[in-house]
Image (cartoon, rainbow, N blue to C red; front, side, top):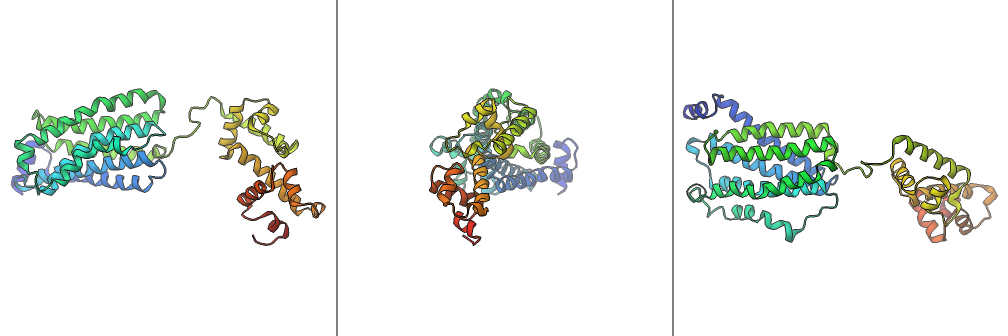
Length: 354
């Protein structure tokens, strides 16, 4: 133990052994926790969250290997731990590129034939753990090659960030830059140690700890980073315009009952209100979280409900009520009524359960 402390004092910039161990180990643990959190909310922003979770998991494994190696007597590490660490190292930049693409492109999909080959080297290292020894990594330039291979992905990662930088908001820019710059700095730390001998080996794990805690803070503070983008994030209309349009729409629907026309459409409704069609569409989407047909049907169903309970319509056929409230057919009416009320028109009229 004293020998390890002496090494830490000599190559760890005078930082106590316990501090280096705690700092670097905590970073790996936090990365694993963050990864689990992202997996738990993957449905919110499915692919991007999964890829970021995998990226952080790869980092956690990589850092654990580094910590075990650095603080073990004589740097003796089991073959399994060593190869899992190097395998994770090979996966980091491919996962970074995939994550950046999925973060910026809403319709981005994981293509197994196109994207899986990027992760094959990492998977092969793990599968070949019994064969790949420290001799391969250290004496046969395996580790050096794995470090330089990351440089192949760097231009593509930078290109994705630059091309999409102006299409995202300030918070997203800070996040993307934090992830991108952070990953590059940690990689540079390992390069500076092994290739150029400029910094101690433990510098990269310690640097990663600061990165992951900053990312965790930013992620907790700005939870929208892990949720779907707002559809009208870059809307051309102000909130006042949306409010006025919605007020006029409600007044029109309540007063003139245009929904009773089976042929009413979004453009026709916009013409009646004398507003642009896209403004009306955005207004309905943002204020009700519904499409135009669904929103119109809510008024039709309420009108039909009132008639079904009104004694004046007691002898009126349900098909007639459906037609007079704007539905093209009884089947469409029944389906819409069931969707909105969870019962059938006849059961609703009789007051009995569906």
